Image 1 (cartoon, rainbow, N blue to C red):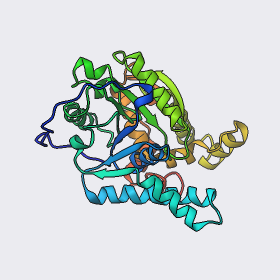
Image 2 (image 1 turned 45 degrees about the vertical axis):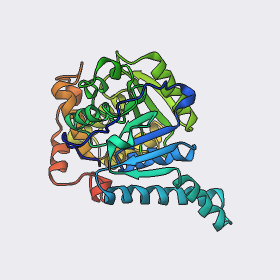
Image 3 (image 1 turned 135 degrees about the horizontal axis):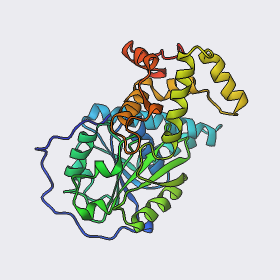
Amino acid sequence: MYSAISKSAPLLARGPSFSTTSMASISRITVIGGGQMGSGIAQVAATHKHEVTLVDVSQEALDRGKAYMAKSLKRVAKKKHAEDEAAQSQFVAEIMSRVSLSTKPQEAVSRADLVIEAIVENLKVKQDLFAQLSKAAPQQAILASNTSSLPIGKIAELLDSQRKQRFIGLHFFNPVPQMKLVEVVRTKEADQEVVDSAVAWVKAIGKAPAVCKDTPGFIVNRLLLPYMMEAIRLLERDVASAQDIDTAMKLGAGYPMGPFELCDYVGLDTIKFIVDGWHKDGEGLKGNPLFASSTKLDELVKQGRLGVKSGKGFYDY
């Protein structure tokens, strides 16, 4: 994950330019954060012939992101050119040639039409990042956060009114190359032209946009988190086992994954972070029993059983 940018980081000598960004002119993308999400966004944008700069705090982090993209693209290439190794290599090389790596965020956004942040889910870190980027990005660039749980308006809180009009949420889903949905989150300040441009760009990269207001959890997580928390409470009340609850939802409701499989995939620490935040001060959700803490969830997180990423969660992997 991309970490905080130093407040003392040097800014570019040149000021922001005032070129116009329209639906047709989003061609230069800067992605801040070289983790799985950021790398996935960069891969998809580059695949659709955008010029992409991927930014992180260290060359090591960037190398990991580059390796993730290359591995993902090789899988795609094998499907597209199953019997032609030369064509596979050319496919990967051509897309990767459109991706530049940088450890200098201000420099990386200086020519960007669209800046997408995909860093750690920490409000202050994101606010500080955008406060720095806003001083270097072109005035008409669209700034976007890939947050899954933090209010878009609060992330933009330190920006001036002009920047806020061009600030939105672009919430991709993991794994980005495979998942079609992108939630386009509209704040009260965002210009409709910016939202329209973002929607057109999402379609241009082969994704399906769903536009929503800036509300906790947007669409998917607002519906998904209560579902997962209620499943955990069924388990706590010994109504049924995790396996039987998963089987019931897969075979009875047609879901591809049961709630506990999904919890383990998302990450139990991530779920706890989101629901605790919503219960504490989520707009319209504060004190809502749907998001009250769960003893079972708290215990698993404390034990380091975070799901697939740690090898153990509700299930062992």
